[in-house]
Length: 233
Ligand code: CA
Image (cartoon, rainbow, N blue to C red; front, side, top):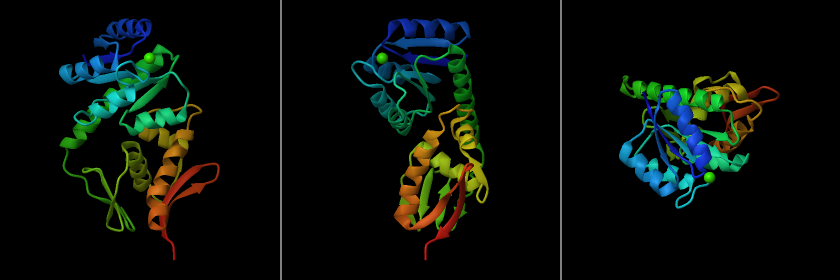
């Protein structure tokens, strides 16, 4: 069974999660501060990390940032605040998903299963033969190297920005709803929180359309978005 590491300083929550996860059959380790948690993650190499953001010694964001230098294990953040900027920061640091406290344990268990499955699917894909570039006008995206160039110049995207752009490019000329993007990029249905999609679309427009005088991501009113490159005259 997969090994899950919990980094959470609220001992009651940590203990509760530990018992629930063990009950599901997972192997579980617990750390109560960021520094110990980071060391444990590096030493024990778990299959998934549940990471509280507000931690003593080292913040959850910092743990996430440092882990991502060497590891691509799935990370689910726990956040006390229902604050979009907090979530976006964590996702930019490479977390895969987040839950706002208080949460229902069933939902966390469901997301753990999704994250583990996505991760395994990703590993299988990496072993498959190389994908070809996805190109639309001057925008070229390489799914293997995670590189994007626009007009021959490299553009640095975060993981979620990359995945959002990739999905839009793979479905060019089709209207894509916010829910669809949430589902594909995050792996499940979000209820009433698709504003995070708009945040990522804004970042992408800034880095691609504004920077290179293109119009590629179009808003389709009351539906979502459509990808189609128009070069400005
Ligand atoms: Ca905490």
